[in-house]
Amino acid sequence: MSLRDTLARVDEDLAAGRVPVARQRLRGLVSSFPHDPALRRRLAEVYRLYGEPAEAGRWMYLEEDRDTAETAAFEARYRTAPRRLAALGWHGPESLAPTDFAREQLAALRADLPEAADEAEGERGSAKSCLATAGCLVVAVTFLVIWVNGFLAFFD
Image (tube, rainbow, N blue to C red; front, side, top):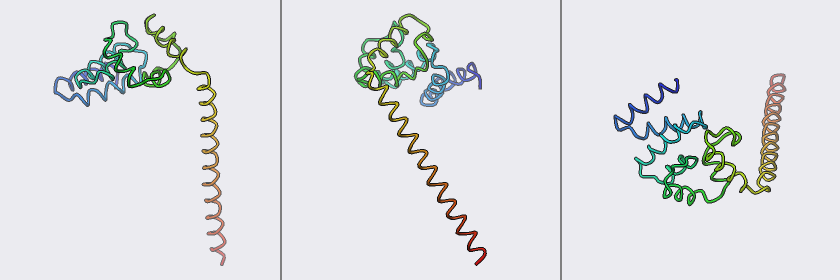
């Protein structure tokens, strides 16, 4: 479904009072188009309908005309730079941001990231990879043992 069609459905959902459905559609759109400020703004408007200032602040965080109370609620919920950056769902470098303000906000968050977090993330990724490899190996060995057992049972 195209962006235009999905936005039309969002409008229909809101007009019919299906706010949760509209919110889900917008979340999907923001996930697919993370650099589109209009989609983030629309999602913030839907969260205002819910009365959730932290979520509205989350989606307006990169906008210069954001509400200070919503921004404070967002920052209180997501207390650290890594959590804020993850919550924003931004993919790619700051240079993809549509405004200077958004680029500055993203750069400030990235500047607050602890350098050890990058190393820890690398170590976690390595550990996950090791566990995944070990899990695959266990499954393969189990399959082989069952197959050999069945093969030998066939000739008994």
